[in-house]
Image 1 (cartoon, rainbow, N blue to C red):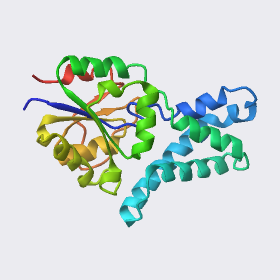
Image 2 (tube, rainbow, N blue to C red):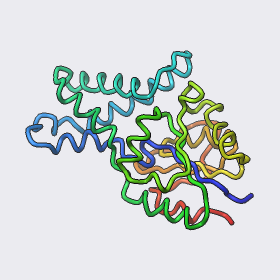
Image 3 (cartoon, rainbow, N blue to C red):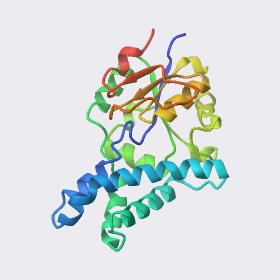
Image 4 (spheres, helix red, strand yellow):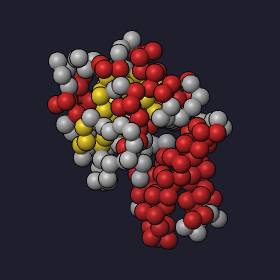
Length: 228
C-alpha cells in the first residue's frame, strides 16, 4: 500500500534531547557543570521516559513538561547539583529551544517534494512542541503537530497511535512512523504502522513482541523509503 503520510516522534528523533545540557555546559562560568553534563543528560532522558511509562501504567497522567521537570530534578540530585536553582532554570529554558538534528530540514523538504504529508506525534505538551518547532524553523514543513494531551496518556498506548488515523483519515498501512525510541517504533509496528527506528547510538534491539520495519542510523534516507 502507498505510504501517504510520514509521522515523526519529536524528542530524540527530530530534536536533540542532549542539546540543552550540552549548550549549557558551553556557556561561560559553567566549568563544574561541564564535567557533569553528559551524565546529567543521560539521567534526565532516562527518568523522563521512565516517568511517562509509570504514569501511563498507573493512570496518573500529567503533562510532559511536569515529567521533564521531575526528570531534571532527579538528574541534578544524582550529579550533586540540585542546589543550583539558576542552572535548573537555564536547562529548562534551553529544553524549550532544542536544536533539530542537522539532516531534519532537508529530509522534511524531500518528503514534501514527494507530495507526502508530514506530522509530529509526541508525548510533548502542545506548548513545548510549538516552542521546539518554532525554534527549529520547521513549522512550514509539517502538516500538523499531534500531542498525547488530546487523549491523556503517553505512548505506547494504542489510543495515541489512533490519533493519526483520526486526524488524517488514513489506514495504519499508509503510515510511515519514525522514532528514535526502539520501544516506540515497536509499539507503532504492533499497531500496524510501517516503522523506522532511528538508532543513532547503535543500541541492541528491544526484546518486545514487535520489531521495527527498518533500522537507520539517522533520518537522511527516510525519503528513500517512500513507496509511490
